Image (cartoon, rainbow, N blue to C red):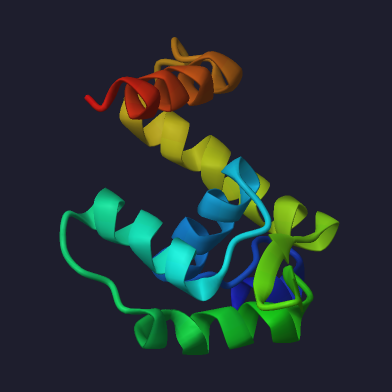
Length: 116
């Protein structure tokens, strides 16, 4: 039984999580823009066609909206991403709760701006 069936967590792949994170940081984005962002994160080429199925799945769950060739993250998508974002920070923090999510996210954005 999937975790989402009991209300614990949304069933989300790593690719879906990354697409949601990309859209939470800058939206709207086209499939090509999303593929380019994921390519930078994974340090390997991600083609637009490779993210078509995950985007369709996210559309089906109501996590993203599609219009005029671009995607945006919905409130439902934000709610689905939130526990995973918190978990990621806690994993990187080693469970010590020394990292603050808002500070951590602003640091990531600063590293991206600086090209580090």
